[in-house]
Length: 220
Image (cartoon, rainbow, N blue to C red; front, side, top):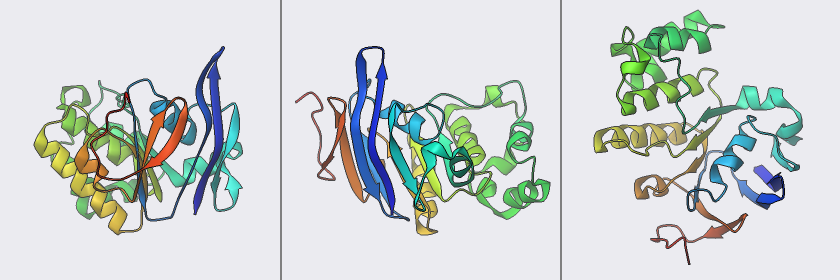
């Protein structure tokens, strides 16, 4: 089991996260919903190691990953809302930056692995900055999986994408879960919520487990 215990974060006097806690079993998916600005992205940034919490724990394999950055690097793939790509480089060169420790691994993934599954093998020469939003998101996911992490954290991966891209990303997430991966995702999308074993609502700086499948009025 993976545990998030009492995560707190403030900016000045403003509290963003107040004792946020949840648990997730390995191989499961949890969804986090809530209004823009409610703290969802802040929480994921902390869990991915890109932002420091004021206090709290992220327990993986019995250790607090927030105090062991190497655990996060080895075990977590992170897909932020913002584009992490170097737009001036080709798709292949972006991939090489992340797969640089395993050239054989990159070749294999392009031939019959995750990068092939995401359709990246057919666009390797394209400049990343000229890709559609959907292909940029697929490339971001491919980069996040360079080390084959068992945990994938995604911040609204299907936001502003067309239906075909949403379907394909949703299909991949199903595949990742079926092969034993664990997913933490923020979303407003009902198709993504359908993947989740549990759904939590972020409101008033805290996280509350709520019933899956409902249409939420976040302002209530």
